[in-house]
Length: 532
Image (cartoon, rainbow, N blue to C red; front, side, top):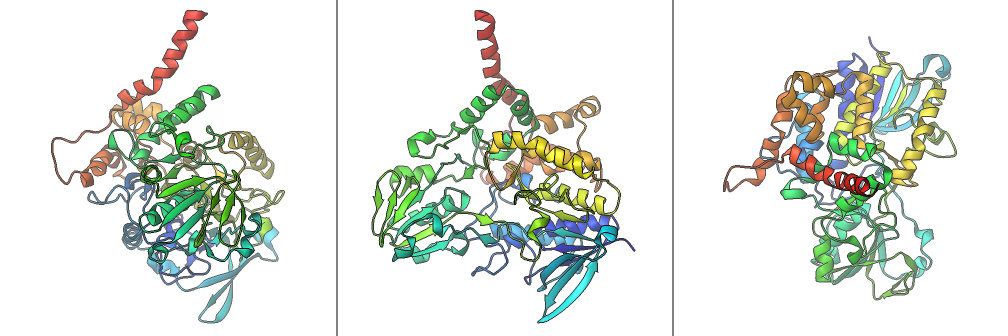
């Protein structure tokens, strides 16, 4: 018998964990609080305590080729950006295909995870579960926390003087489900994240007036990028990542801001971030600029205070006769079944090696899955995380010493602050992070070797989208279909939009994009040579 592993949550991270534990020969049980799998993507008409919550109109911000499981592509006819119901459909199909459902105990609440008395020697955990009103305690050799971090809303009521006098109603975006209750209302949305923008745009066609209040602005991007291709299929490439990391910072920052401003000038819409070069997670909304132009949505600075019926902004303007305030202010990291000191081991900050392992723990038998945020899709990220964690639990991989892990965390802090600013989230560069994880388990693509042995594949891997399939031609979970999936990913991307075929479909040309991206550095070099 292999080690016993407890998996908390049966969303995408939990299902990936089950599959990887199976591959490593680990005995495992997945505990799911609700009656169904899917986690975040399992829609419910009412928010459920202890579960993530989405609203009815939610679509993905990552395209289907980038958000799929690495060995389980979406079918050709799926749209590139999918409704939550389609994502849930795909998740269920994956679980059934891989025979994962038999390992899940549904409607089972994990109420406590504590170190066993002999943890220093065994690394074991005592887990208390509740089912049908009865409690049961079980010992496990390792734990994978897959319950997500968008569960407990951050409602900063103390940051808004006068809110206690406000006579309208206010709620967190977690409790928003659809727009019908806001017909003809005057609504203030606080927060310029993805949820805030989506809700504001959705309400703008039904409400009397919608305003968004934002402290720092944000890069608002379209899902539709150059020549009509999905944004991440064009932007998330190895070559782009190489330029960002290799160019001088001032050039890299200039290119980043220029790229972000190609759609429209954010400063003309009140959306320009206070610190433009920061690589904070952008907001994806195809309709917001149009709604601002039409006057149905307005952008305002931070709220200074509330009165009984209005909000006074920091620029002195007032939004009168407000009916509802929606706080799209994110979530707090909270795992009520786990001692906070385990993941916040230093200065009450989240401290995790590679965003997964608590570095100061005596035994590396607990993994936080899905905690890291990046510009890339979550599904392939958690897939690599679970592969590595399962190998560590099975003693196939060994972690560095505690000092080495802490030095790695500290060493990356400077770049994290420069690129992403001060943030509670564990943000990272997607491709760099994926390659790090891939190198630990032997799944990182060897680009020079590919150019020597398979130039066609190498060109697509390096200049094309960094899709999940890139980490499956080799290493654990090797998939024989990976090469073909990479070479045909643009076919699957273009098929759903070609319901009326006018002429032959066109795909991006990587070398053309290369020349475009190099044009400014070459121009800059020419100027330097002329004058010096």
